[in-house]
Length: 96
Image (cartoon, rainbow, N blue to C red; front, side, top):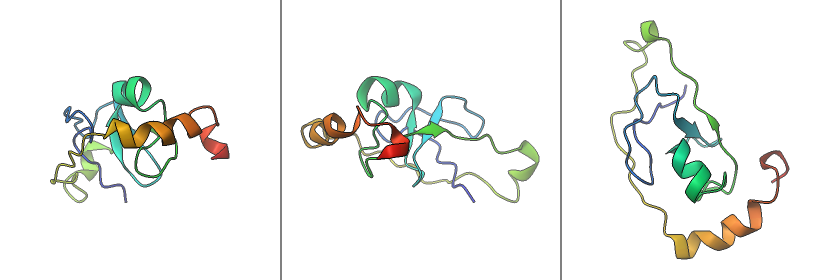
């Protein structure tokens, strides 16, 4: 079951459960589309994988399966991330 995290880990932008702007990696690290494209270049700073749009949970399932309440706000430390980004950004996410 997806946690449905409600904010971008990098810029802290709100990403409600029905946001079409939320992107996740295979470990559910959650970022907004702008950070994924402009800052991360489709490379997760935590695992090195790529991102996909987070699916929208049907509203009728939210009572039984609510979104995560905790916010994950860990801005990317660019000096540590740039080598990983440079290594992986030219490789298709499916080949990493």
